[in-house]
Length: 457
Ligand SMILES: C[S@@+](CC[C@H](N)C(=O)[O-])C[C@H]1O[C@@H](n2cnc3c(N)ncnc32)[C@H](O)[C@@H]1O
Image (cartoon, rainbow, N blue to C red; front, side, top):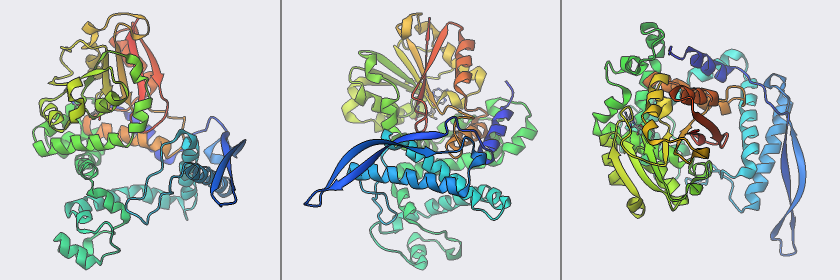
């Protein structure tokens, strides 16, 4: 399987190109309110469907169409927050809540994001400025790295006002006052360990991303994991995970970061598949890290028990950090998923695992489960679940599509692998064993919450 050059192309078009939208209008229920004599707000659903008018294609958008969509989406979100008594997010407070992931505002949020992004692109003096903005993203990343290096969020008083840069420098023990970067309320977020760990472990990713062009020249058409941009950046023959596992601090940061990233999508993760319908069954979480994903599933599926498998250093961490109230339903074990699966389970879950591997390795991982799967209707003989960021190349406009194409580049950078479309996954299963039947759960949603389910028939 050649290096995913087409993936690179998609990544570039995803950032700068445009994609058609399948629908031109979006229906949203309008909420209206009335005040009673005590001036308390009584909400009343008028159930009047209003339409957000959208041109069929991004190319047809103008300042005015975009501005109108922004206004309408904001109104819908604002009304929903009022209706539910949720305060609006602000920049003024460190603990200002984030927007809820409520399904009622899902479309409005998407339209808002897409329209803001498009309007920002139109609001440039020239196209060069737009390209420059994309190119300078790296500087923002480095700013984060400096903030972390000097632990700047920790010298700030989260409830205090602005602090003079000289004072920040003194407290952070940083001599280079003139090189310090703007501190914003966002920096406070980095006081949280999992967020800082996520960005710290991103350093490997950034160094590897820089080597993509060199790796393409050095190893054209390669899909060998040991010929990744990462291998040039770190001058090693180890794979990304072998490199991590040799260093306890890198392993801790990566796993802590993965736990943190997952926490932002928990609400979707719990509902993107009917976990509790699995009943009294065993779920084997292959490459399950610290078991943080299964821990969430355990909370909504009380009859399930779990086996979490990963590399030995990761499993040791899982046992250390796992929530005490769930331990009796969990077993951790070291297992290399490129070897035959030793455990019989009803469900094998791979979350954010298959996208780390090119096709031949991914097929091997699936085939290693075959001795435990028997043919049966609707998964009664055992099933495999893959949760990854599914590529929908033409379904969404930027920036919605941008996250997945960026993840695609990330996968190329560290493991010479790629993100896939639903049909790509279907094809993988078919190549692993043509008896596999597949179906998809939960289209859209945040990181790696879509599910591809497969079983033998
Ligand atoms: C991107 S993380 C996903 C973790 C978790 N499933 C999640 O969704 O947050 C990939 C996981 O695969 C594990 N892994 C990598 N190579 C492995 C191997 N050969 N055998 C078992 N686990 C492996 C890593 O240690 C890591 O925990």
